[in-house]
Length: 633
Image (tube, rainbow, N blue to C red):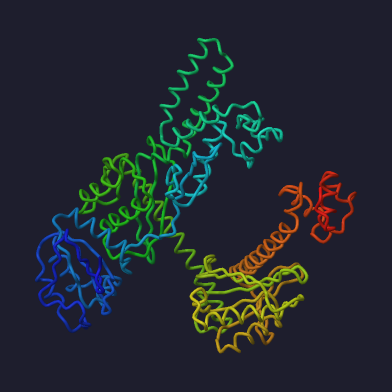
């Protein structure tokens, strides 16, 4: 548990506060000698917390000697980031530990709990998906999920990303001829002909009525062995089974087993990403750029490179070796998959505690090396080059973004660059389901968690101007009401439309007493973005700046896509409610009817003969009776 000041109280560790430390007194670090306080600390291993005036923990670190490490912050010169952190420190608290390993464990725990602003913090939204198998269903299928759940299903992974994970499912399914189609079993067995996958030898044909269920279970069990890294064991077992079948003169079975063995061996020779689940070696690269740092992890199996993972971080306070140690701990804790060996570009002081930390988490020995020469060093050099490339590419991209936002600031007369941009569009189909969409771009990138959808409430007829007025009034009214989901004001509002649309939107915002710059996004005759326009009609051309032109076009297209998708979803929902209760009309026939007739109204007005162009006679007659009010069969 932590106190209000952020200090840990734990019986397992000795908690030590310097004799003249007052953790609740707000002091000015320029006028109080924190260095003198630090000299009272013991020369023992432990963890320290740097505290701001309000008690917030701004940094957590560990040390072999608390006295030496903590006092070093309050003497001598530092780089800009360390100096900025120290300038905020008005207090500190320390926890004495029995060993460096205990200090490392406690530091990791505190960083995860407190998320101090100056520590290395990897992104929480970095996804490492799993393969899920629910063996309780009649014909279990593999699926890709974002997180492991306590739901009784089996999970494999995590893996490096959704694309790789889907490739694993596809490769394993094809090798063992498991289904990858959308058919449901046993419901769809015998209903239709086998699909193309069966004719290509990629599926056993489980939709055929004479395919044994026991064989499906066997193939599924073999797929599980592959995902568990037991491919060699599986191939040996299949080879013995093939030899037995041949001796018993069951040649058809022997040939089938031979083909399956070849498919599995092909997986291995192609260095398939399936092996990533049991990668034996990771090489770590780290590069400190001018603005951001990057680390890269190259995954190897049997000496063969199979995948790369990387992440960009703010430049750390720590030196390179210490930063790498912190990154490695967070990376593998989050990923929950540990290789047999990890190669680091620099040897951290806590190498042995770090090795023990990862070995305990993995439940087996994880070896850490920092080789300086030879083949192992070459692996690290490759990882270093990848980290440098990603950092420099990110710096180049950030420079482009900065230029775009500065141009918009200057040309639109904004007080500062528009870091947060909100865009709005109206979508309707006549008077039905009039909707609006709000998209958000933060630092020139879509921030989809802040997207919002609106269904127009005050209109019964199509009117884009009043629809936009309603949407802006509701959005900024929610802001004034303190609604947390609308709490952040944009630096710029963009409206899909011309001068009139921008004028209506600006007026709606001004009536609420909120000041936000509003501009319209004007399209040309080919429905492409042409320019921006102010509420007063002043047009701002972007043709001379291709990056800005492309960026505004992307915003307009994304907002239109989001609005149309929402409008269609409502329309399909209405279609479904009107058609789904009709006997003989399932999802497939409903979609065929809507594709042919476009609307439910035209389906209602169609004759039996017109309906029979799409569906059978008995279903056409059922539709006629349904809409006539006679549901008797």
